Amino acid sequence: MVRSVKVGHVVIGGDAPVSVQTMGKLPLRAENTERLLAEMRAVRDLGCRMIRFAVPDEASIEPLRQICAAGIMPVVADIHFDYRLALAALGAGVSKVRINPGNIGTEDKIAAVLHACTDADIPIRVGINGGSLPVKYRGLDKVEAALAAAEEEIEILEKYGFRNALFSLKLSDPEGTVEANRRFRDRWDYPLHIGVTEAGPLISSVIRSTLALSRLLNEGIGETLRVSISGSCRDEVMTGVEILRACGKGAPMPKLVSCPKCGRARFDADNRFASQVQELLYRYSKPITVAVMGCEVNGPLEAADADIGLTGAGNAILFYKKGRLYKKVSQSEALALLTEEIEKF
Image (cartoon, rainbow, N blue to C red; front, side, top):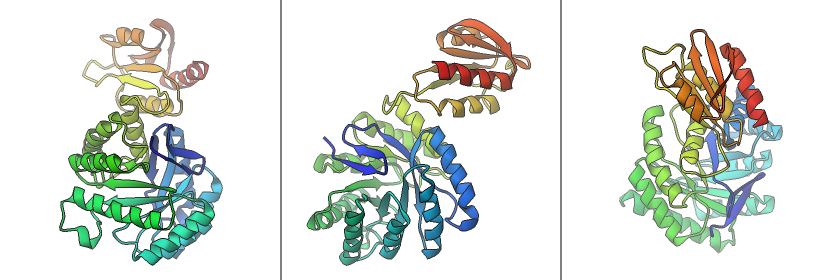
């Protein structure tokens, strides 16, 4: 079995469920703190278990301290170039430190971080990224280079008796990502954080990430994941949750069935209303199916197959429970009623 590490209250590895995480998009600055906290609460409600922030300079440390103190979810410090920022982040209260072997520096600097993490009982993620591999490995095939970098870091960790670690090997192509993580798992039992790096905006990222992560997850590889999107944290988390649901991993999750919309639609089934329903469903860990249909062609039968069905009827919505028409309500009333029914489910 893969060993486990604990990031705040979240267990990664062992027999713990696979967790979804994201990365903050705004710089850690005092003027952004309230927006960052609001975003953390929003993604927590969508199923995010932890969040990582870039810590590029000393000015980031005080906002980081305030975010950690809020206790919304475990916070991970993303450190490049300057190991002293890792030490400062530990003092600010982070639950995990991510270091990049491609740029963190010499062994003595890594050792300083290891000693500090040992004292604080905080895990390290060794984040190996195809775009910033150690210079000496950059002439190799990227899969070989990522594995060589991982082996070198494991030798350093174990030289100092440090076992409280997890790894990530992220490449920008799905095939390389799958191969690197498969070969890592064949050799080592450290937990793996999986993802495709630099995957692009929403559509390309969803496709590349799904291709790689679904294969790995279905092989039992990957204890935590992030879907990297050139866009919002909310999209990253919802995509990660959907990939887990499709692979049958993690906690029970709601399922949304919605029509693709056509000229027959009686209300905006696939855009604003369906998105509101989707975000509502992510707040719950219940195996409930909700159907959102735009017209009377497929609506009644889809509603019959779902626990709750919502079908457009002009400006109103027909609210079905277990295939039976329950009420005719407005869109705002439908969301409130849906919340009430999910709570009772």
